Image (cartoon, rainbow, N blue to C red; front, side):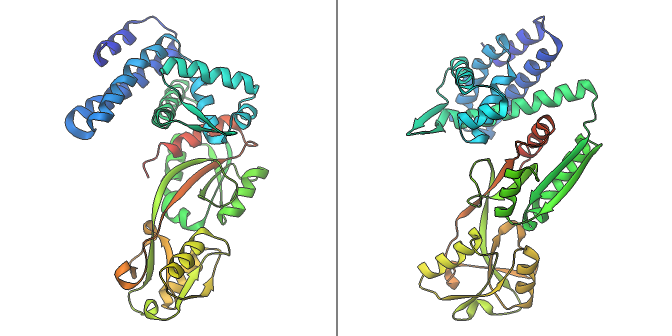
Length: 342
């Protein structure tokens, strides 16, 4: 069945209003993606996958159940079927049955076992982004019809360098979508925020991948760069003077390890838990630092391998959520963040 004929079928079917909007809007979103791909914005392999997915979506039109998708996304976020079962208040066997049903409906294996661990298959990775977007559209549609201004309090945690780069747009989206929402912002290092997520004092956090407890959603991979002041020559010193974050931080480990691997010596001259301290050392011209490219400012110069500063890995920015906050509100706010274009 063609995408256009499927829309006609969805539009002409007598269904309950709530499900109909979900079906119709999600289907239109898929068809728009496919049509955009017809103008060259998608590769042929992605177009082929999307067309298969549109055809499989007809099964969702016959058996609409967003809770299957919610459970699927929750398994990925929680890191296991057991943890997801606790979060969605079902038994582990019920969650497993939901996922078997979902796999039957999409016609693909979404999870695979690796010893005691469960991970997404290649099809599961592809399907995950679509599942999140369908749930987002579904929640947005219901919110628009209910005319509900979601209120309450939410605490967002993130390191201060992420706050500079990402927080303004996140806050803008939150306030536009939920004008009555009250937001508390906590700026702390990732390890501390991970503990605060675990004890429920923070509801949502953006963390550096590899810091604190595992799990969560990788939102973006940010390029790391070496920087120094354009007005000074700290990068020419031997050993290289470094401004680094707190002990054990992944930025610090990357800086020291990469320099040592390239045969250069380094010494820590400034250590700070915040980006403000690192920035002050750079502006003073007394140190070299590793920061994300998004935080490079006028007055900084990016140092290259030709100058003796080796390539650095990309760093994952991870979204984690607490199990102790208001689940419906957190679900909607997580959807706002996940669907942001980093």
